[in-house]
Image (cartoon, rainbow, N blue to C red; front, side, top):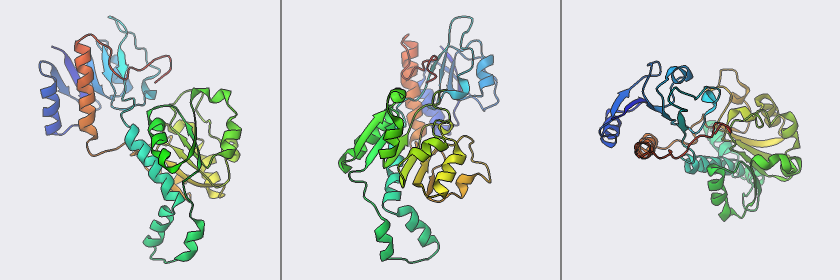
Length: 303
């Protein structure tokens, strides 16, 4: 029997679902401030709670991101604790969010929604500003599950897709940005990617291109992106992640034109929590069998 502390807000039905799947284990449902000494933890508790738990053997995150825990000492008296994340879990919905945002700019949906809100009819003049995604050149920055799925979704449009990840240091990034109609970033937070998209990078991008960030907010210098949108150099941005969340009042993204701000909801689905429970239960069975969990975090890489 293993004690499990759960830091995921669950309904009574979901709690029962988890109990049935973890028969024989003791489950504690915790809030974000509850101290913990359980060997198994499910959720994303405060880093201080994780740090103080000397009994921890395995932490199953309910996220892909590992950033707030990266600096912790994972050694424990009985050996190093394992951490698993939800790698690949959000690939389908996030890829669909990216595609929806790109199409909204190409087909004028964002603009048309605003015109409807203002009860303003323009009609035929709108047509001349509309574009087709068919045949567009798309740079996918990140080789993970999200961009892999997005590449599949873009295939029917005949897009010319270029993908690169950690090998970006070996490619002519400036040349790729200058040719791209769309750039989609889904890279993790690492020292090499922080602030990578700054004023210089945005100036290198093709005029009237679309930029999408669905990975980590640390990738982008947000003031520089706002300036690129305000000036019209970029024709649109799909922003799912920001450096500060919730986005503070007065942040430029609240007023920048041609910005779709999805408020870190890009991976959301109506059955998201149930699917997270299923993932945890699958890994719990592996834990009891002495196997490594799926989605094991590599501490040397930080993801």
